[in-house]
Every structure is written in C-alpha cells, then in structure tokens.
Image 1 (cartoon, rainbow, N blue to C red):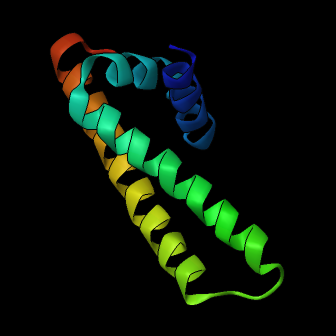
Image 2 (image 1 turned 90 degrees about the horizontal axis):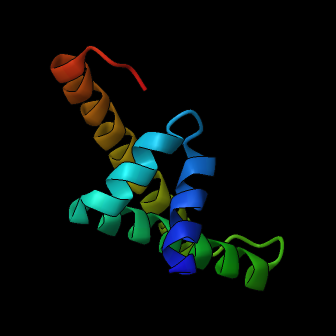
Image 3 (image 1 turned 90 degrees about the vertical axis):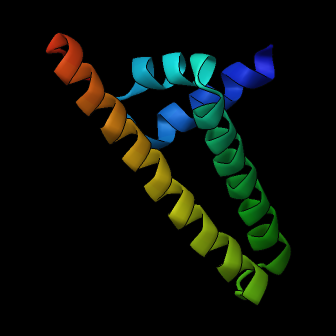
Length: 94
C-alpha cells in the first residue's frame, strides 16, 4: 500500500505540523481519505498542465489552481475540526 502512504505523505508535506493527525485520519476516515486523494490528484493535474503550457497560463491551469485552493481550504477546515474534536475529548492538541 505504498500509494496510500505516498498520498498521506504528500498531504503531510502540504500541511506541516499535522502529520500524526493526517496519518490517522487518512487511515480511519473514508471521507478524509477521499478528500486527500482528490487534493493530490488535482495537484498532479495542475503540475501536468503547467508543465505542458510552459510559461503560458491556460484556462484549464487556472481552473485546477482554483480547485486546488478550494480543496486545500477543505483539508484545513477538516484538520481544524479534528483538532477541536480531539481537544474537547482529551484536552490534546495537534
């Protein structure tokens, strides 16, 4: 299952300081797992579009960039909610 670890590692590098939370949530929560898969897939697609267009920006690149920003916001909101839930239950932080 190297691919799953790679995706969790990519998410962890994009959202540093949350590695343990990301690993646990990616493993245990199907909704978060899918969100992470979408984020990494979108980032890869954006990279391909940027590479294929060189210095020119294309409408497709802009769409993927906007989508990646939205997905990043969803990941951050999800992580914040998980930290809030954990703090209420056990008094722990990230």
